[in-house]
Image 1 (spheres, rainbow, N blue to C red):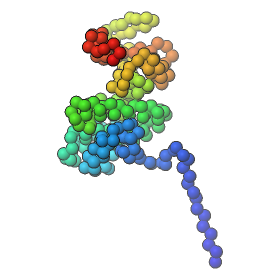
Image 2 (tube, rainbow, N blue to C red; image 1 turned 180 degrees about the horizontal axis):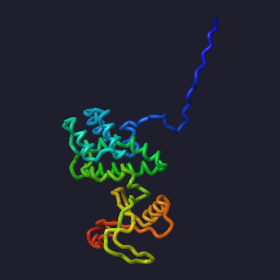
Image 3 (cartoon, one colour; image 1 turned 120 degrees about the vertical axis):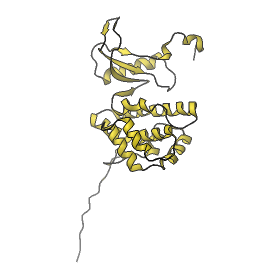
Image 4 (spheres, rainbow, N blue to C red; image 1 turned 90 degrees about the vertical axis):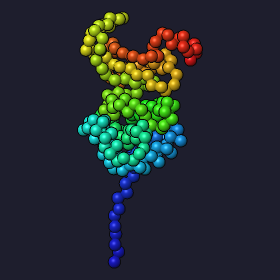
Length: 235
């Protein structure tokens, strides 16, 4: 007797992901250019944690079902003995998967996701430079990235905000307290030049679908004119 069986072959096109595929921590860290030493250190530390509990806390945080402090408390409860700075960075790395889910649901370009995720690298390097620890000492800073409120668009990072001063009048623009503006942040990602700033603002103008004047607010020590006295001309 001849038995005939039919099989269905599922082919996944190159460059796409299977449904439910979750990026591994190493894959994420390599994608955002973590130093090899940092990757090895963080992967070893991550082994001290219950991966399912971290994933659950990360998803709750990304989908705004708990606060960042509540999520951190769930991770701290594992009592691993790992540095708090390292622990917080491990949490944010694990939160990359649910964040990417939210990006896809919102129809936001994945390129912007990876550009925004690079902020983990800048804070990793700052932490290592200041404390000699691979981690982050500004965990609070990442909330708006993971709640789809802050985005890296070229050299600069942007978020919608309310104007906090009483009043401002400039060229073709008038602002009063409470008006909609965009806060701009300057990550420690390298040289800051006029061309990269202009290109970044053009990206933001398009991303936020602006049609008129776009009010930009930036508070940074980099804008202090006395910096000219502290650093050489071509710094």
